Image 1 (cartoon, rainbow, N blue to C red):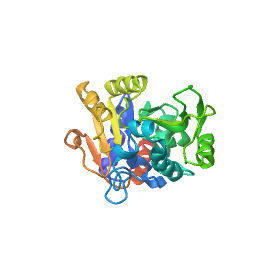
Image 2 (tube, rainbow, N blue to C red; image 1 turned 90 degrees about the vertical axis):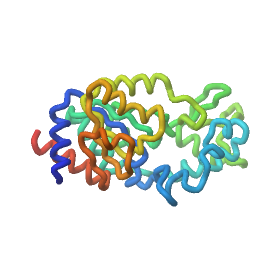
Image 3 (cartoon, one colour; image 1 turned 60 degrees about the vertical axis):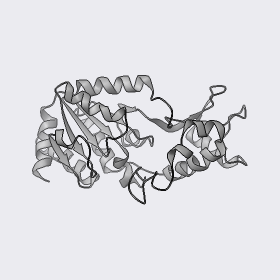
Image 4 (tube, rainbow, N blue to C red; image 1 turned 90 degrees about the horizontal axis):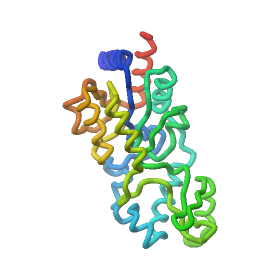
Length: 252
């Protein structure tokens, strides 16, 4: 445990409102690749505009699901790691108000976090945009496996769309409104496992700063907010968050 962990723990204990903002980096220890790491990132070897754009889903669902089917397979069976559990523990202890996440994997909820704002949606369900029917993840996977063209289809025969925000789509207005309100009201925002590059979510720390709050950054890569961070941790995300929780509890 370092002096930075101790300092950040004290900030958490003294803050009236603490909010976490998480990105792909928090799920890497669970075996889920992030987006931009050279060689291993999800977009390292493929152009997302050619496989994960809403226009691709509309005009070529086979191509879209050829990619997204692999992503579904990569997420299957993945479990929360110590970093997810650390945030759930902070919430349970009354030290964390909510988790705003860019992730679609559902691991925060699986770890026990109750107030999770999934600003990019979730793979937990898929919907038919023609008739509005919604299907569970397991049902969507079964339909994907059963279709000769590799496209999960609704009972009305139209292709399903995962309930995630694709490139070319707007973020859910209600989710972003809640996230913005939490950011503006936070005394401390913990930015974890995010490059803080993708807008509008990357603008949330700025809302905290503009309202007089502070931000702390726990991620390995450099971010545009590093200069403004009251505390900066760049080691293993599991180890850093577990040490942080231990420091908060040690002086509870």
